[in-house]
Amino acid sequence: MLKIIISGCSGHMGRVVAELCQGDPQVEVAAGFDVLGPADREFPVFSSPDQFQGEADAVIDFSSPAALDGLLKFARERKIPLVLATTGYTPEQLAQIGAAALEVPIFRSANMSLGINVLLELVKKAASILGDSYDIEIVERHHRRKVDAPSGTALMIADAAASACGHETEYVFERHSVRQPRDKKEIGISAVRGGTIVGEHEIIFAGHDEVMEIKHTALSREIFAQGAVEAAKFMATVKEPGMYDMSMLVK
Image (cartoon, rainbow, N blue to C red; front, side, top):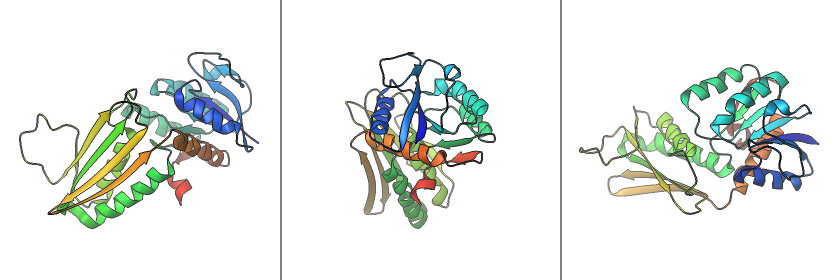
């Protein structure tokens, strides 16, 4: 049985991951990390990774970018793979993750949903065929508590489209100050925050007299938690340092 640590175990996603692990005979929650410290849970909870002295096969992180330093230090010292499902990292933190991946296996994705990662492949295909004859706009919607905007998934989608469209691109995040016609190289990204929306991402390809839309709607957080658990199972088998992502699971 695989032993998994949940970082951010007292948060919304951490609790969903713990519930899934309880019903999965292949995994066991060895411990939880959370800045709130010990809690009334069925596994021990530590306020800092360096307090944990047990054994584990992988760490699933659904906490916040503020926890990154401690997690990377823990992974390096203990040689335990990380599954980073947190979003909102700064460019400097992304560089830290890349450096750590030279020493330990790290799985990182801004979205752990299988459907989203299939959508990325569809976006690449559409962008490669439609080229610069279609304008690309991305609209993402999330619940009122989400802090980062645009979402990490929206940026993943934009990167997928940019990599395949065959021309120079520029991301535009707001238009209220722009007083000029839309440029062909623009990829527009808009964020909506409200209510309890789990997550919606819509990609619009707008051409002359024709519009094509690709959309993904998450109806529960369980799809992200399940993807993270499957990633942890995969990472428990990985021995080589490096960066890993959802493409390893959808092929």
